[in-house]
Image 1: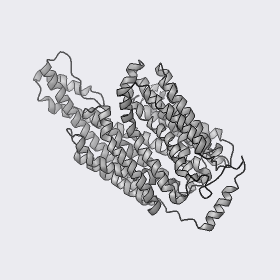
Image 2 (image 1 turned 90 degrees about the horizontal axis):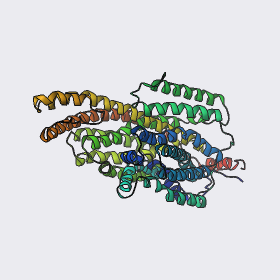
Image 3 (image 1 turned 90 degrees about the vertical axis):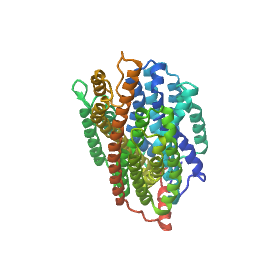
Image 4 (image 1 turned 30 degrees about the horizontal axis):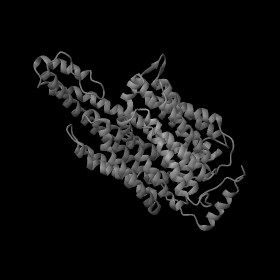
Length: 542
């Protein structure tokens, strides 16, 4: 049976229905990357878990999800996009049920790792399917829907999580996936066509081992670096040595791919397409700078301004909605004018939005002060995700769509993890540098016998928390101590946030400039399309 094909020889007359079904699974995978964050205190109490265990429950999912995308993307080329999607959604659904049934932190961690594997299996198949079922002139709109979910899911996750925690138990942040996953799998079996453009039935196992081990070292080091103070993990093993080992293994992976002429995990021919190479560079830099926006704003609202997790998510929700709406329009504009120009405009607007946030916020700002900057950033985000994906995949051979999807998404995931680590460290360093100075100024308002305690509390404060109030104070003294400590911390955090946003803006400017290297692929003539169609129909039978 010939499985088939490309959009020039459509495999379905209902591509939008197919994409909608696959996007439900994609949405669930992204949602679970953020929905658990809001349940940290609940999980600590409900499972008698330590803070480190809960962090691993969160990070374990992202680690597995990030490091397997290259492999699972290539598996889609080999065994078929629908097949891998169905395996992924089934595994994700079963793992979600196991998460909800967990009776211990170890049980939940194992189930989250399984969830990450399911998410990694289904995620690349969505992009690969877009290249397969949509003609070039509609791909921008299709990627618009993809971009809407990319921008919307991570922010709506805490909102959904907060609602479920308020009305049900923490288990329902996982159980909710089960009926949705079952329905999605059934609809996929019924409506998603068989798709497998690849010509190979073998998997580069050496490449899989090298890529997985290398990415694990890098991503683990970046995620866990701050927890180990970027120093020793155990014995002679340090964060630096783990990251360096990961880089060396990735270099060996690339050398192995160069040596392996056929059936490679990451065909280096992908990078012969200029737009694919440029798009990966832009995607990496974009995620490195973009990740700071939501990451820092959430910390600002919760730690410096005292908002609850649910209130914080509500403040960020309009931004997510604008991103989702903007992505759909950006996709259409990309079809009409080309993804390059829409993307450059979106990145430039993101930079402007960050500068507006810097100008509009101080230690006492409320949510309304953030609104103008968040509106600009929301619209700009909508003009980046879809055009970036479209511009990156322009010119990619559909037979390598899975491999290309895995590489591009891995690049962005690593960029995001690196951005979180670097910009998080910058934010922390600036707070630690400014807080003692701010505390010195605020201490003048305290009775002389409390000033030394106040300065000591400021010196020992955590990275993202105000000075703690010592015991033994009167009610009035404790209130004054707390108020002045909160003011010192809020001022320090705001200054650090401004520095971080300015650095992120510089990074986004670099991404905007790099977009100038994109080329506009020529439209294929009818004769060329016919020839391409015949070539793809020659795919060997399964």
